[in-house]
Every structure is written in C-alpha cells, then in structure tokens.
Length: 427
Image 1 (cartoon, one colour):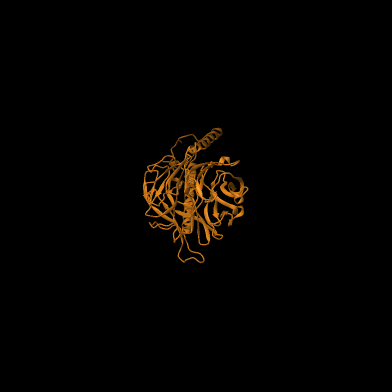
Image 2: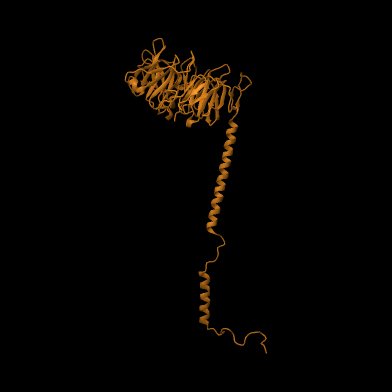
C-alpha cells in the first residue's frame, strides 16, 4: 500500500537536527548572502557620464543662443544713417553697404605712425611700405591690386593681414571709406561723410555727417557699436588718443578736444590753445604744438589726455611748422615734422629726438618738406611723399650721421600726381 503523502518510507536526510547545528546553518546562509554583492539599482559611472553629457548639451545650447543674440545685435547695427535737420532726405552715410565698384571719397587727420613686421624689408616696389600709384595698390608682397580708378586720399593696413582701409578724396558727394581685401574685393563702409578718420589700430572709425560726430568699431567688414554726439560748430574728428576721439574744433583755427563716448559729449577743456597734434607716446600722452616762450612761438608739448589735453611739458627750440604734417614713431622716440621759416612756410622735414624734451629738443634736417601721411617702420625708417610727388626715405641712423634723406621718383606717377603711402596698423 502506497502511503497517502507519496513520501518514501525513509526521509532523505535526518529530521532530528540539533539546535546548535541549525543555528550554525542559518548563520552560514546569512553570511553568504551578505558576502554576495547585490546588483545595484543605479550605476554610479553611468550616472556621472549622463550628467556630463547633459552639462555639455546645456553649454552648447547656451553658446548657440548667445551667438544668435550677438548676430541679431550686429545685424541690427547695420543701419543706414539718414540726414539730419537741413540735410537731404537721402542717406548720406551708409553702413554695411553692399559690395560695389563705385568709389567715394577722406579728412586731414592726425597722421598715425606705423610699425608692422612686413614693413622692414623692401618689396618688389623697392620700398618697405605699400604704395598707391594712380588706381593701383602696389604691395610689399609683390602684388598689384586694381582700385577701379577710385581716387584715394589716405590708406591704412587692417590688422592681421585683413586688407586695407582707404579714405577717398573729398568730392561734392562727400568722402567714402572702403575696405579692400587681400584678394582685391571692395566693401564700401561709409559714403557721403564730411570727414573720416581711422584709428591707428585699424579697429575704430570716426566721422562727421551733418551736425553730428560718430564713432564705430570695425569688426570684419562691418561697423558696429555706432555712437554719435552733436558736433560743436565746424568741429571734425582728426584722430584717436587712446580710447578717445581727437576732435579739431575749427579746422581754420587752433583748438582741439577729446570725445569719450562712454563719458559724454565733446569736452574742449585745456585743448583750446593746442596748435597741432602729431601722435602719441607709449605712455598715452600726446605730442603736439602750443604757443609758448617769449616771444610766443610754436613749441613742442606733451599733452595729458586724462586732463583734456592739458600741457604737462613744453620744449622750445626747433622752428616747427603748424601745418599739422608729421608723425611720431611707434616706439615714441622720434618725431618727423616740418620746419618753417619766419613766414610760417614749411622749409623741410626735421627729425626731432623726443628723448631730449626735458631740455632743448635736438632737431636735425632730414629731407624735403613732407606732405600727407608718414609711415614709420620697425627699422626706425620713415617714408613719405614730398610736394613734388617723390618718395622720401628717412633713416634715423643716417640722419644722425649728418646724411640727408633719399628722394626718388615713383614709376607710373603721372605729371602733377602723387603716390599715397600706406600706413600700418598699430599693434
């Protein structure tokens, strides 16, 4: 007879286990459970990886959003400035104008010295500077770029080999500022302005249009961060001193002022008696001319921009012209300026050692009277064009040795014409 519970007659293991053995068996079982790692519900490494990925995605999206906002801001700044009261209804100054081949016209600004690495070795044109001859830009890199017959008054290199900024001659339609690329492309930045000046760094531009003076930054092929202020009388921008725009209050009379857009309007201050400004020193002070001495005559002066061009030092001695022509070398050691006779007529260029301003300035005859821009190279050599249209090279070491400058005609210059020396962007 099979048992009802279907069990075998003899169990497979004894059922009468002592209490101490049972307790030991339970302890061993629990110990094995504790020693065996249980699978984690969350992988810490995976959590860290996912969190880092989310952080990168958030940063990427934030950067894209900021870039989009900046694009909108810059695009919104590309506007056309129309004429103010009393001006024609058509725009006179155009920002971000499409590329075109029509030329335009530039002011008589403070000449900026130049110092670029590409300016120390002469190129194919025989000079260490770029030249504009007629409607052709002859570069030191052995390339000629056609300017499509656009008459240029002043030209300056753009930083980082970004091309050239060219200010056209004045016309009945005003002046034009154009950006010429290394490949010969042309972008008109301003058209119809009464006066235009480019900062020595090549990154800022100031101009007068109607009754206002305006300044803007140059980013790529666009003018951005446009700010303007009312112009007092016939005042025009003629240069930059640090982050301030240098303004000549009346082109026919003495008097300069500074305009700092972040502070307010144009402040004449102590600059009303300044006769000319030729550049700046590395410490920020401007080098200019004021009336001083007995009897009163034009003397060299160091002007403090922090005190609205107040005179911090004067030095009389050399008989200098007040025509505004001249420039300070990039290292602040030399000033090339025109000398004069008693009739105020420029007689020739003088090389003045600015390290001697504590006493009587040391000046030496350097060459024929200069006109237009002066381009200084790192080799302490200055290039300029004289009244006859010849290219003049002033080497400081030779002038100190008693030698005169080299004067040479420029091939391709038509009778009565004159080449334009291209200055370099300051670092």
